[in-house]
Image (tube, rainbow, N blue to C red):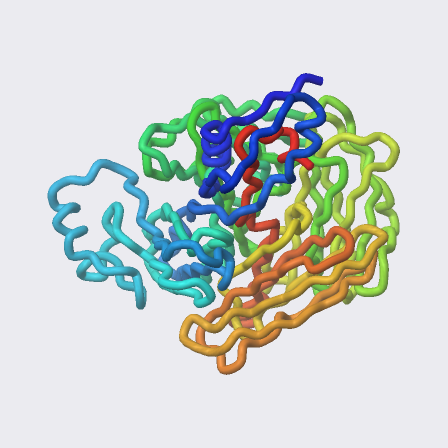
Length: 526
């Protein structure tokens, strides 16, 4: 197979397009190499991994409820970019629309959202482009709060020593009404494709897709809906224009002619890129954000089913041209078992399949493992998890999560309120290091190392920072062993309702592989 080499300039452009641009410098004292071909390529060094220099994230508008309170928490792990220049990290309100003279005057006097103030009089939404939250240093979270029902979507960026591993958590408590509960979301980087299994358009459910465009040119997006019988006709979801630096919410039930209990939503950008979030609100079962599933793959790991789950519903979609046959296993604290009556699942190509697993946890927290059973085809998947009973029910979603490559971070952890789920789905144990940062208002970091036995889920409270005040961040790093997948549950019970939200912990992609000038491009995939 013919291979092409990548010039220094081309390498820089390619890495920047991936969203993490790293400094590239030619090695000093480089000697000329005689000859070309396989011998020279064999002698090439493996590409170095360097910290990214810039990160971007997008947070959708948190809620339209008049009884909602939202907390934003930003964090970059300490020591993530040793030697990097001092950087800046800031979240700004999205433009949304062209500003008039009065908005410009308000913006001039606007304050940061510290303490919930937005706009100079604290009564209006933050003017477009207003700073909502700034992170000052690695290793210490920064927080801001708002009680606005019209709080805007946010566009954020970080550079220098604040870029590698930068993460922002958006946590909203909705005290009453449709969607009552805890709505948690790790703000997402802009991309061109997102998969959301677990959506619905049935009576009593209101699911919105939020599309946020961070760029100075418009993005055009297709919203594809797939139900149990295949593609759902949704003409209004095709060619949705998202203006520059703005957000567009779309109610899914407005796109479908007939109600669908279990839907998979694919957000696909025709041009430009967007951040996508899907918020679900149920009249009786509360609500939460549905995190995007990991990229389609033959196997899937869904970590973090709480032991007291009263109902677990699995939703799977096969986006390829072949059907998928899956074997189901529940990985608990002592090993993996096959759920009685749900040993396998057949998913037809282009269709969404769903199965109610009931109280599959049976008092023991764990994870669901999906593996190809003979016929292998890529799938995306998610779980809808319910806790509580009767009018005290609350819902959260667990998507398929990619394996942890090196490190992942989740912000906004509360003392005694956070739980980590660590699962080793293979035949090899995994060792991970968990670091809890100092609190947003003081304290000292805490570190602990855990071993996850093969085929099991280890559920632990992260180590509590000494003297911590405020919220703190948790960073999970793989030390050794086989594949490991992780999620975090944040529980904030209120008035007898077991309010909770679950966030996946995929790799934070804080570094990029940087080839030397003239190095074989294929080395990047090794």
